[in-house]
Image (cartoon, rainbow, N blue to C red; front, side, top):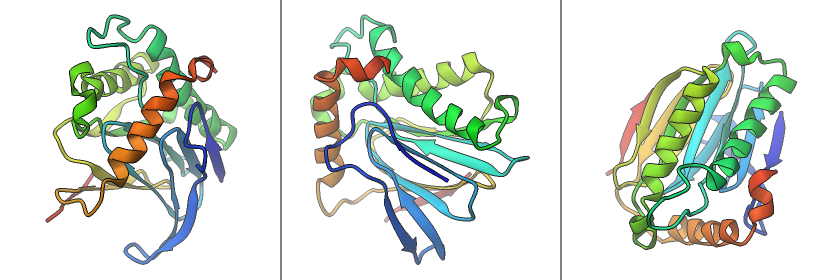
Length: 210
C-alpha cells in the first residue's frame, strides 16, 4: 500500500483513511495533487471537478492505484499544447505508474480507466482546462501503450469515483446536486498553487459501473 503526494497539493493535504459503509470496505480518499496505490481489498475514492483521475491496475498482480491532477493553465490560447504544463501531468502519471511497478505490477500489463475534466469552474472555462486535462490523459496513455478500457470525461458534472484496486472495477457517481462548494473551492486553491509552484511541475445522482 502506498499513500503519496505529488506536485503541488493543498497545505493540509493527506489521504483520509476511513471505513466506507456504502461498499463495506476500508477506503482512502485522495485530493488534488495526490495519488494512492494498493494491493488490498479496499477502495480508493476521490471527487473530481475540472481535475482528472487515471485509475491504473495490473489484473495479474492484483494491484491498482489512482491519481488526481490538473494541468497548470497555459492561458486562454492553450499555446503550450502540453509543453510546459504537460510536464506536470506527465510527472503525476509517472509517479503512479512507478509506484505500481514498485509494488510488482508490469507496465505492459497495466490497463486504465479515466474520469473527470468536467466544466464546473466558470473561472477556468475560458482556458478550456477540462478539455485540456481530458486530451492530455488520453494522449499520455496512448503514447505509453496503456489501453483505456473505460472513460467518463467532460460534461458539466462533478464526479465521485471509487476504484477497487485489486480488480480495476470502478464506480462513478455524477453529482448533479451539491450541498456546498467544497469541490470548487478546493480546485481553485489547487489551481492557484499550480500557478505559483512551477518547480513542482517538472519534478439525483447517476451511478455508472465500469
